[in-house]
Amino acid sequence: MTSPAVSQARSSTDEPVLLDVSGLTVTFGGVTAVGGLSFDVHEGEVLSVIGPNGAGKTSAFNCITGFYKPTAGRIRFAGADITGKRPALIAARGVARTFQNLRLFGELSVLDNVRAGMHVRIRQNAFDAVLHTPRYRRSEQAATDEANRWLDFVGAAGNRGAEVRNLPYGEQRRVEIARALAREPKMLLLDEPAAGLNHGEKAALLDLLRRISGLGTAVVLIEHDMGLVMEVSERIVVLNFGKEIADGTPEQIRADPAVIEAYLGSDDAEAEQEAERIAGSSGAQAHEDPTADAASQEEDR
Image 1 (cartoon, rainbow, N blue to C red):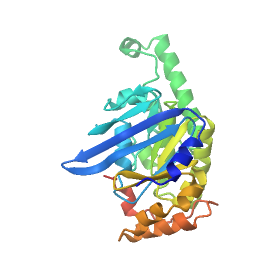
Image 2 (cartoon, rainbow, N blue to C red):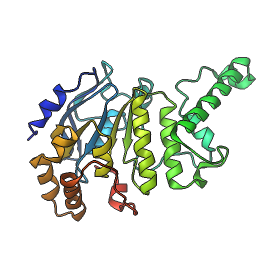
Image 3 (tube, one colour):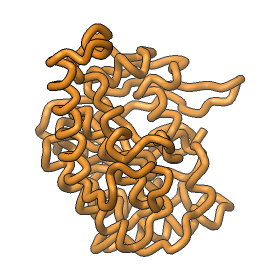
């Protein structure tokens, strides 16, 4: 059952609705991964989607970005129906994402990985590319300048001509976010961006998320780090067994009995720890998690 906090949170947001998910259902061979999920995201909002492992969070992301075709329901983005559209078309409309497991081109350079994210914006054709026309040279230089600008924005360090696979994990995360931002999206979806990061890297991520929001880009993240979630989120949607059980501000979610029960009702020790973090978090700072939890690296189904 949806928490009473839902209507309070939705009515408190004044910005126009950017993403509207209504009755989203995803089934796999008779198993319901997402069942009738409805929520919205407003322009420029920072929203977190949380829930126990297997709650359907990543499945919902995959539907929004076109990697899954929903069994039922509707997804509207910026006023257009994007339900079941191909990922490239959805990306072109202004939706970018990162993944739980890094999906970079390991043998390409740092710079070229970010440039690859700009293909929907580059103004050149096959004729230009073959003959290296002035338009081709201009667009290539513009893409390089833009890629460097986004790498600066995310705080990427080191040699940008080096193969990205040789970078430390935290730096690869920055490159992946820079590539997503290079599309200049209206909405950025981040799937567990803090997974595997140390305390200092999480603090830098928190600052980066705030700066992305400052650009006017809506940020939607799936995250298990409750300290980071409570600190950065304007609103939090909680899923359990593929359904929304709460939607509210961090303060409302922290005190919501349905949320605590969803975590404490599990035999999973990790879920119980997360419930304690939700109830006890002061929201002061992202807590340190020196080891990447293996469970958080798996796809939510």
